[in-house]
Amino acid sequence: MTATARPVRRALISVSDKTGLIDFARALSARGVDILSTGGTARALKEAGLSVRDVSEVTGFPEIMDGRVKTLHPKVHGGLLAVRGNAEHEAAQQAHGIADIDLLAVNLYPFEATVAKGAAADEVIENIDIGGPAMIRAAAKNHDHVTVIVEPEDYARVLTDMAGNAGATTLATRRSLALKAYARTAAYDAAISRWFAGELGEPFPSFIALGGRRQQLLRYGENPHQQAAFYKTTDARPGVMDAEQLQGKELSYNNINDADAALECLAELAPEGKPACVIVKHANPCGVALGETALEAYRKAFTCDPVSAFGGIIALNRPLDEKTAAEITKLFTEVILVPGADDMARAIVAGKKNLRLLLLKDMPDASGPGYAAKTVAGGLLVQTRDAARVDDMELKVVTKRQPTAQELADLRFAFRVAKHVKSNAIVYVKDGATVGVGAGQMSRVDSARIAARKSEDAAAAAGVKEALVRGSVVASDAFFPFPDGLLQAAAAGATAVIQPGGSLKDQDVIEAADAAGLAMVFTGTRHFRH
Image (cartoon, rainbow, N blue to C red; front, side):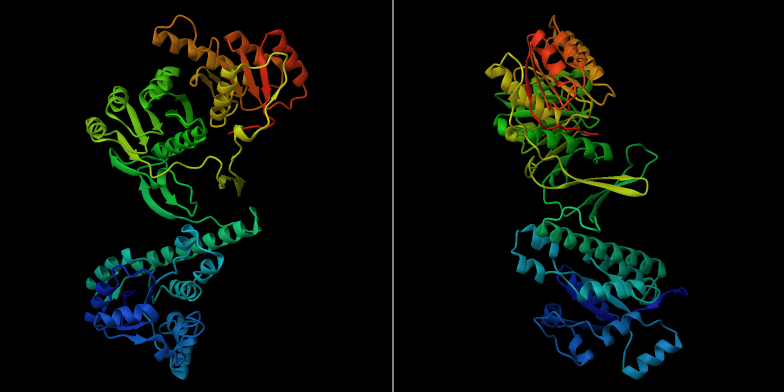
C-alpha cells in the first residue's frame, strides 16, 4: 500500500440508479466495510440480505419532508469533510460523535430523464437533487481522504483498486473520480438552469452553463494533432448522437460534423414530402435533390457535383433499399445515414467494411428550438438556432415577371438548401435538384461564378452539352449588394431568383432583373452561416 492510499472502512451509498448496486455492496461488505444508506437504496440492500445502517440512525434525525431532508446533517458532512490527521478536525469529531466516511457512492435524482419525458413542472422540480450534489462536492473536495463515485460504471474500478491495495484506494483513483464528480454536478446544474431558462422564456440568462456527458473519445479532431471527444447534452433534438451505427470504422470528428450538417439540411426538406437525398462534403451540401424514389433522389443529388461527392456523407429520408445501396457503394463514401435499411441493402453495404452505416431514430425538427455556441478568445458566442423556414416567410415578387409554378417550387427548394450552405451562398436548382452550389466565398459574385463553373464540369461528367444551370433558378442566402452577382447568375442561365432583399441598391438589382427578363422574389429573411 502506498503512503497516499486510504483504507475504506465506512461507506455511504445512496443511489437512484440501482445498476450494479447489490454486487458492489456485497464486495464492500465482504471486506468488512460498514455500509450506511438511505431510503430506497437501504431497502434494496436489506432485501438482498446485506447488513446496512440507515443514515437516520447515525444522525439521530429522521428523514422528513418526503425525503427532501435526510443527509443534510453535520454527522454526514463532517464525516465526509474531516481531514484525517488534523488535530482540530479530530477533536471536533470526537466532541460531536462524527465518524469518518471513507467512500461515497451517490448518483443523482434523474432530473434530465424527467425533463426528457415531458414531465410537468412539479415533477421536474421534485427531481432536483439537493443532498446528493452537496455530498458529492464535499467528498470530492476531501479527495485526499475520501473516494467518491457518481456512476455505477466506476464500481469495478474502485473494487480493483481496493483489491490491489489491501482494501484502500489510491490518490490517483480518488483524484480522477473527484474530477468526474465535479463535472457531473456541473452538468447537472447546467441542465437545471437550462430548464428554468426555457420555462421562464429567458434564452440568455446572466450566467450560462453548458454541460454534457462524454459519449466517446475520438481518434483526433479536425486534424491529427488535435484531440477531440463527443459529448451528449440535454438538447432533446434527435441527430447523429442517437443514431445506431451498424458497421464501419469509428466515426471521426469530421464525420460527425458533416453528418450533422447533412441531417440538418435533410430535415429542412420534410415539407416537400418526397424522398430526398443530401450529400455533404466539409460541412457544405454538394448535392441535394428530391425524387420519386430514394434512388432517383440520390442520382440527382450526385449529378450536381460528382467530384465533391467522393468521400462525402450521404443522408436519405427513406430506408435504404438494395438498388440504392448498390448505386451508392459504387462511390467511396464515408457515412450513410438512413431511417432504416432492408436486409439486402445491409448485405451490400457490409461489403465495404470501412463504410459507416447509421440508422436514424428520428429526424431533427428544422424549426425546433435550440442553441448554437461558438468559442472565441476569452468568451463564448451563443445564439438561438436558425429555425426560420421559407414556408413561413411572406414571399414578395418584386419584378415585372411573375415566377411560374415550377420556378416558385424550385425557388423554395433552393432557399431551403441555401440556409445550410456556408456564406456567401449561391445555390442553383432545377426540377427539385441542386445543379450548382457556390459556398464560403468572400464575394457573392465569386460564389455565383464557382457554382456555374462547377455545373459545367458536372454536365461534362454526365455527358450533357450545356451547363446544368441553364434554365435553373438561383437562391442567395443574403441580399445582392449590387447587380453584379445577379447578372452573373443570369449569364449562367438562371431564370428566377430568390433572395432576402434589404440592400441599399435593391432598386438597381430589381431593374437589372427586369432588364434580364428574370422573375425575382424577396423573402425578407437572411440565412448567413459562417
